[in-house]
Image (tube, rainbow, N blue to C red; front, side, top):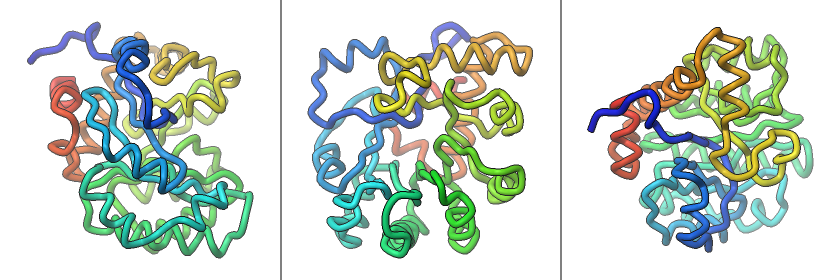
Length: 254
């Protein structure tokens, strides 16, 4: 199929959606394509039973949630990657035991090492530590979620080949400093909706408007850039043919 600039759907590469979401609720997302990350192994297991045309469900263990870390099982996690091409939300967080977080993340990266997956990574408060771990255990599918690292950390992430999922709550100087060809949109819905202005997963129009102004582009061109970036990342990670058919087609035609 061939798409014009106007008919590519909104793309949201990091949002939280309950695994028991109904078809009516999905229809209320106005056709958006959403990468739905999970917080705990139990939530990931429930999500693994779903099959949705416009949702990509992740397998996650949020580093800031003790329950997620204590219930993480490396064998079960590795098995979950047979059903999904998305790992998230995982990473390090300023809250909680660093060694436990580091142990879980290391096991996750070991499982992902040769897997065709994307990784949505959280780094709040421990950005430098996360980047050091990723330097030791690189992966072509790294997406740094809501990245607010220092200029030195930003360059380290860029050198690692990382992509960045960004939202409308991020400052202009950060958005402008990140390479446009490495940007993917996110809402992180629902916990940050007041900051991002997102009323639902996939509501990225405010972000598109911000980036259009920063880069002297139209919002349609920004959206196409997002889809082109997803295509490039999904191609190099061999994820493209693991995406739902319509999502892969939009990426290829962007």
